[in-house]
Length: 138
Image 1: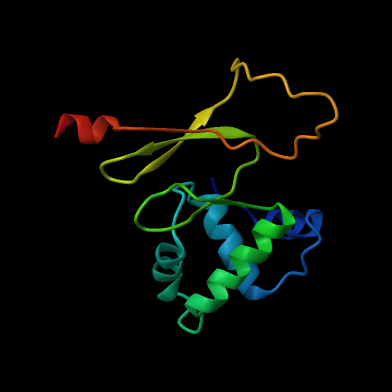
Image 2: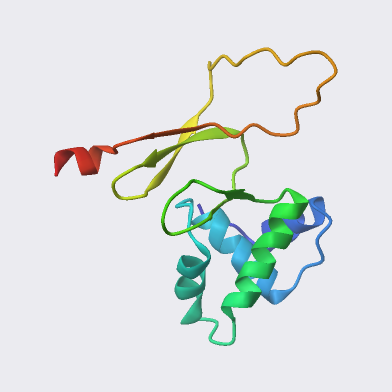
């Protein structure tokens, strides 16, 4: 899906983030590429069109976006490091233990443990690990 600059600006504003050219391009990349990329993958993908964009700027922008709740940092235990995820709806993840791919899994109809009284849930991180269909075929 292609997002307009206004969509990006609205998302940043909804999370209390001042827009900048770097923030817009990084958030747009995450919104349009739901592949759970690493910092290096994002930096490499954006480098050709934005040669002055540093890896440090990408990392710091991702940390800011995650701290505001606009995106999520996924510590999936994969060799490549943390993955970054933009999602408009809560969902689980499937992590392939062979290739490291991360796939979204809808939560519709899923049942969860009852949270004891007095606790306030801020987010849920549910991930499954196993072998993806592509790796099973090999």
